[in-house]
Length: 270
Image (cartoon, rainbow, N blue to C red; front, side, top):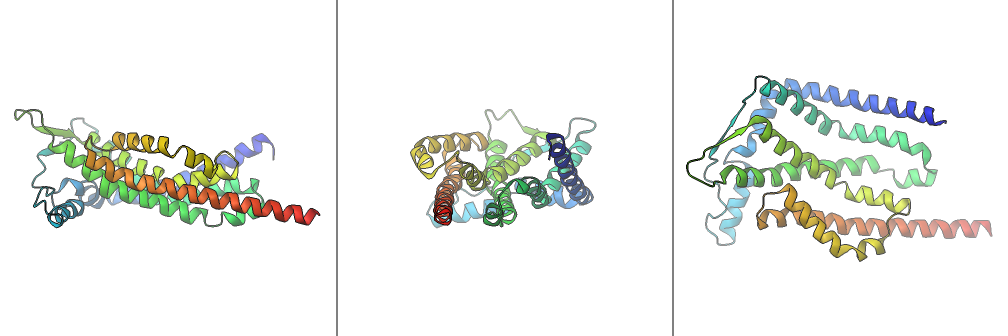
């Protein structure tokens, strides 16, 4: 295929993925009561499941009710004429992308798979399933861990008793959207390392050598996407570090397979 043919092929894959996202977004648009009242405003309630877990944990380790959330002293408001409608549209699109993610990845795979050898396509047969599971796991982690920690810290933070927190609707939704999507993408780290190892840009030795630097980067990333308290940063950093170690194992497996395949080809040629 020529370069223009590749662009035409990419255009159709992007078009199919966009249509899938729009269809899922239409469903989310119609389910606005559930998405806003139960999903988006769920972490705003003191009886949200994450707050209950934190409360039970504080009692379990003998800290009484130190982690128990008593109240959320803030309100959500819309200060622009089109604020609620815009929030409805963009929230629907975000939900559509999350729901349609497996199909989006499928279209991406359909575009790149013709450029791979048959053995490489067979080795990556579970790519769509694994990448989707990792993404959904990251989305759940962002929603049930990062989001409530951020809302609780920022919503209860006060520099003066004279100030009452009235948060804009767009600010509140942006925090949730950023936490969820960023976590979903971060959880794709093993998939990224797999392909970087396949093309020779990453090796297990490279990942081990820069493990300490990666630890610092992970802590910095945790500080960016979480409230500025140590407990939240550690909670977020742990799964990212686990993913990094898993990525090292995956890179090692890929290298071993490539070495076996190279030996097999050498033996066949002889």
